[in-house]
Image (cartoon, rainbow, N blue to C red; front, side):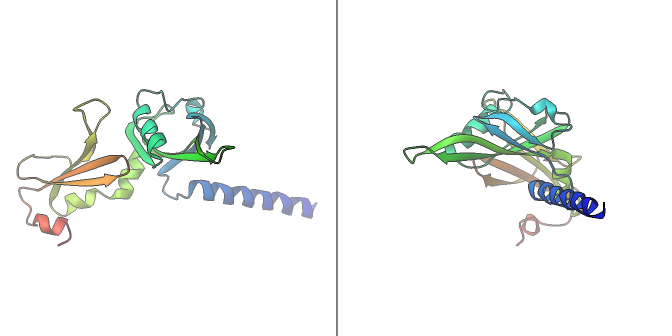
Length: 196
């Protein structure tokens, strides 16, 4: 009886280790890990609460196809979002394209490994509030899926476009733009924002 109980505990610990390895996140930034063979979601961990995403074709879905196809053709991980998730809430997807060797030894697209990020928790981890604490207003944006569309990623409560400094932040297949300005009652220079 005792031996059976210990085996069950070992199984539980082993499962917990696998979960911890897959998710690797104490602050719940990562909502789920998905596998999408041929671009279609066919595995999700955890499945509970994420059932709506099962069978979603990332290469054809209107809000996901641009970044999914960029990741597929470039071979680089690509971030999509933020946008409403089919399973609820706002989030972003990190597409990591997976390639396997075919019989001729050529790389062939298998699909994606996808991390589903909880957007609110992600922004807490980025700590943008510290910009406001140091007397800055900010706006972070990137180009949307439509020509000329600007997608706001985050911004301070009040933001004035007067006397702003703009910094481009390159990530694979995209560029984020940080615009900042000193609050009217602020005293720090843009040099301190950039670490000079």
